[in-house]
Image (cartoon, rainbow, N blue to C red; front, side, top):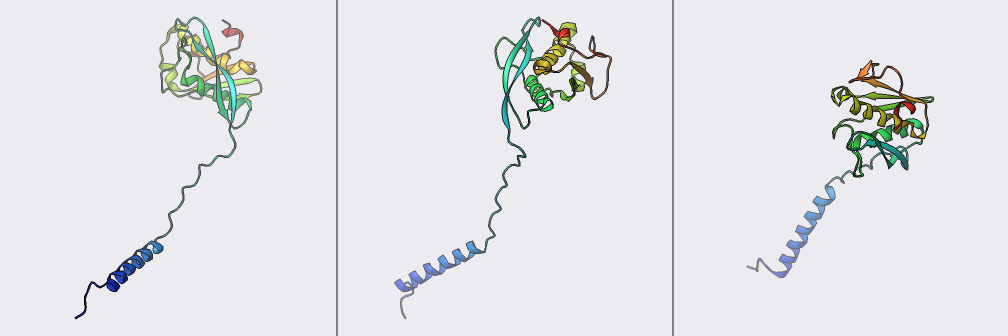
Length: 179
């Protein structure tokens, strides 16, 4: 009887195992590549001025922010500025006006008029007259920084008479929020 583990048998067995492994690998379907995220337009960095309040809630503190927008029109710049406003200040000596995690208001523009749709949570902030005035005025000054005539405030898409203690039936202008 010849040797079972001869050099020829061992090499042949190794080649057979390699061929079986290669056959299994070739039969596997190729993995599906992950598609890149869809970006319809290129984003550009634009600087906007966003207003916050000082710790005593007496005056407004401006802060220049760089935001990413796909178009440089009034609506997209307004929404980007409000998103930066809701995220709070980066500089020390300024306070955010809404609790962290609170949704940013939605904004749109018609001609020279800005409309801000505040979430229902803004009705429940209970800041008192000076805090509510500072909330509305920082929004107004942020939006009217690059132009526009006035800002009309809505809550949940509806006209309301007041936001806390303040009358919001009429639009706010730059003069209503002068320091």
